[in-house]
Length: 315
Image 1 (cartoon, rainbow, N blue to C red):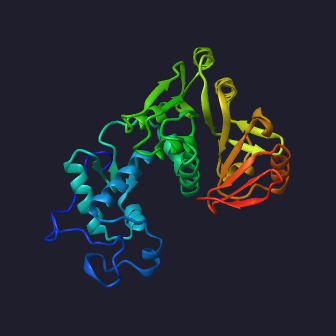
Image 2: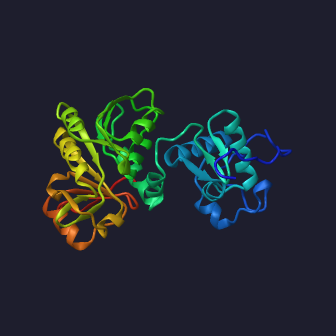
């Protein structure tokens, strides 16, 4: 069918019924009787149909597209229930039904390459982003780097956020449209399509006049020698935003510890906090300890800082 609007099955008899009081139906009851115990135990929690639809919207705003099968798996309900939700959201103008799933109702500014990278280690990136967003106060002034994990930080900001976000990322600017109470400072310049970001001297000059409390930094690779990016054209803007920040928070999934990238951005001594999903390899961990970098491991909720040991923290 391509990208044209796809048909959704006709309304079922139980359209409009009151939502179940729990998020995951018991196996063998209701229209979702095919849900297995394993699926129910790992399903996303929600309190009813309205909450479920809100979660669907949150997902599609991050990725630009989500399939029916993914929603069935993530939410622990039947295909029929999901399709009812999608019909309701489409009738409200919130989403567009396309072959196999839903997309945003308007043309997304995110490229297929960006969406593909966002889907790589998506679960880990989501945990990292959510944990990093907890470091942001409701009235904070932060800068958000271009990249899929840093985009996730912007997407994880709460509705109550009324602070300021500085960014050169087109995708982050688009995401911030969902937080009308926030102030957004967009750093313009030449568009670098692979990262969906503005770069160049114009962008750098704008960033030099700013100050933020925290800069959420993304990277293509991390090792004991430092932090790396894919293209030299990205480096100047990132360095300038690092200099504008009181604190630099590096957000990377564990795959970046075994990845390679050609352009060295900085040493680990420039990083105040690392948010990741698994403990870094031994050599990286040794350098992190030497540089007194705080490590927040989103998957376990543990925090370490230098030689101070480990304390329990929120996931």
